[in-house]
Image 1 (tube, rainbow, N blue to C red):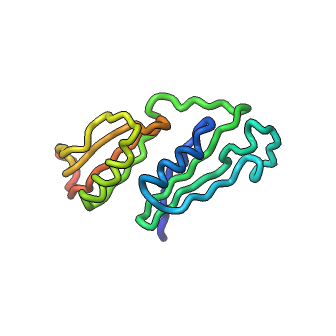
Image 2: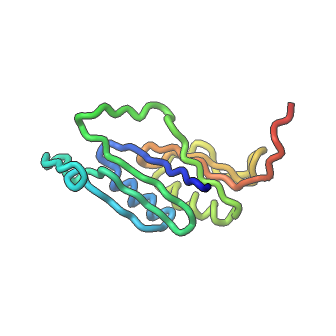
Amino acid sequence: MSITVTPHLNFRGTARAALGFYAGVFGGEQVVATHAQAYGTTDPAEADLVAWGQVEASNGFRVMVFDVPARMDYDPGVIPVFVAVRGADADEITDLWSRLVEGSTIVAPLAAASWAPLYGQLVDPFGVTWVLDVAAAWDGLSA
C-alpha cells in the first residue's frame, strides 16, 4: 500500500493568490473550485473565494488551499505548521528556494546545517512557514 500526504493550507481571502504563487515556484497544474461552485454561495463578497484549490506538479509537489469564509473562525496562530520540501538534489532545492524567497521573510538562510547539506526556512507572503532541505543519510539519534 502507498499513501501521499498533501498540505492543505487555509487562508482568509488570499488562497487563489497563494495557489498562483506556489504554481510559479514549483510548476504544475492549478485547479480551483469556488465557494459558489462548491457550496452555492451567493454572497458576492464570498462567491469567488476558493472552496478547494490545488497545485500538482510532475516532480511530486502538491498543495491544496481553502479560503475560510467569514462565518467561520480563522486564527492561523503562531507557526501552526511548517511545510517541508526535501530533495536529494542541491541544485533543485536551491532553485525552488530562489523562487519561493521572493516576497518572503527569511527565518534561516539556505545554507549547510549540521544535519543537512542545505537547509533553509522562510515565511512566504501568505504567512506559511516553509522548510527546504537536502536529504542527508540518517543513522538515528545518538544517546
